[in-house]
Length: 440
Image (cartoon, rainbow, N blue to C red):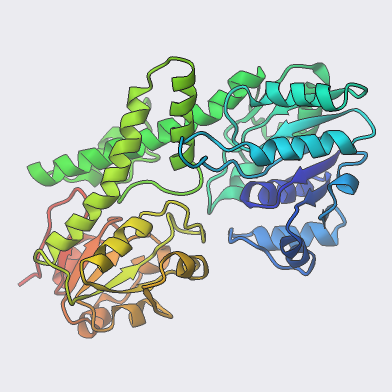
């Protein structure tokens, strides 16, 4: 098929490259000439494992091209995906659909033949209908069908999620849209991926409901971690015992400093706002949002308490600042709350992140940046683990013990075994598990 992908952000670039890998001819379009120039020169504007090789392969094969010209990029396309940003609107929490409708209007004006326009961006219920009305108003002379195709990509494993998804959700209200979506995802038939066809409204809500449920699951286990600390239980074992129940499942039961990223914070808030507009109370989702915000501030107190009640004049080594590993995404990362708060209480922060430094430097200007984990911990009064990058799991703790001013680890991701850390001479504080001191 001939596909256009509008927006080369995280969703658009990954989706475009993966559709090209399926064998489709894909044109990726973006208004930012710097991004397009970088892609044409072989660079990648985001970090996602394997994406650089996938883009390079399909560009060489002639299946993937880039342009700043929407007018040229959408011509003769059988499906046009809108994958632009839908950030939280300042002041009211609603999703900002400015870019979605701007793209829709530009598409309508540029088209010369009937086609199918697909919302890949996360959009509130009713957006597809509004786009349909927009097309009818701008181009009453042309048949433009609408589809909704929400993405379920996890940063750090997005390519695998696209190529081997749990399911594909397609909201359609015409046979032309249904056939276009079947064509786009036909390669998945060989591995029998379920393709769920629904109404536009149902498809749009599935995305928000999914993310809100996963955010709730994370928040639930974080609250269980707090209880575990009070009663002497181990949250890792609690999560394992829960997750082995097939009705619950193991995923997203990892206690930590709270969720962040580009999806969960804005999508939970947007869902609540949609519910309010329709006179429905979503109290569980509202509580999830509030508890998660408090969670980040709670982590500050946890660190301060573990350091004897004050961090003034002390140096804290922070390992990881991105909201999760295998990404450079800093959006709503817990570090954006935790690090400035510690700095405000008088601490010196020295941080290391394998991929996040470039973006984090803009957001955390008072943080000192190390070239590797060992430089970060040199002379530190405490080591705080904020992101569970795999390279941190294999650190030489004996070497670190000789480098730090105080042998103290505050592990907000539970990546270490408490007994092993204590055996190497560290006091150890983690999430939802008893704290331990150096083994004698």
